[in-house]
Image 1: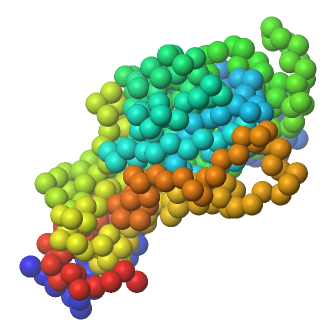
Image 2: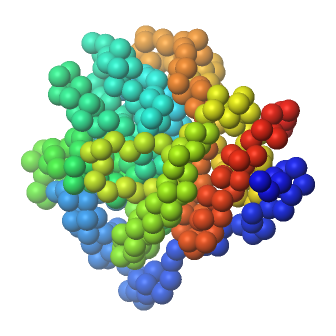
Length: 415
């Protein structure tokens, strides 16, 4: 057994990931220059905004796609379009990005947190069922790092309780469930094109749906509440301006031309790691449900078993990986009910958002989410997954090496 780098041995790797992100090139430049040459910068004034929506809908396999300024407003607009507002409750996972509860609050509704499952880091169906009340109107199903929750269970729950199923697939674009892309399983889907997503325009988002009424209201909310040709509703709603510019749409059109290539590359890298980690008790990848017919990794997420590691804490393991030249991140370092947005004191004028429904978030407990954040989760970013195969194998070699030398770490404490 070779000496761990953290104990003075030679590291597996002395350089970081080899991939650059974002991946872009001449096609983006070509389309951006076209906009500059024509002077048509505004959505609808040029061809790119409408063309991007058409091309995205075709790729997603759905009837409608609407580009927006970001992936937070997509969820706000989706909730408003579904008629969700004051006093209504939206169930979401206790571990996800702050945009999820924020979008519910911006729709003047109430975020309700449910615990997650160890296997997929996503909503636990039993925990969701336990949170349903007479005020529940929607479930927000979030797929972290590309690993979806049990969508069959979520669809069943929504059908039995007449709830909206909003899919947040910001981190799982291109993942397929029984041959259908995530975002098209529920009633409406939210996509993000932030710089840390599957494809990127720096920022931006999209709403996808097969429901014409939801589409029409989303479109009206997106643009000042105005009616438009082809709508079956007058859509006199309190909308704003959430359109993406032609520049953003042009970049996304170019990105869409390589999205499947990027997904395939990430999948190839993940397959290498799956094989190299197979049989290890200390570290394992999070599980994909058998209904997943195509994977789409944002990051490669792994679960750490402290008991199998003989009591060595995950963060000690991560320190050893970093010394080997392959540092692993931990993802979200919080559970949502700890954030000031929910746990802190709201200003008096903001308390009206809850319309008498006062939830003591700080007093709630989500043991699985808490354990995942504190002890279990690790991941490697797309910078690693898009690197060359030997770089990816170095991750596997580093993990194997640290697992083999785990006994030498027993006396270490997390930094």
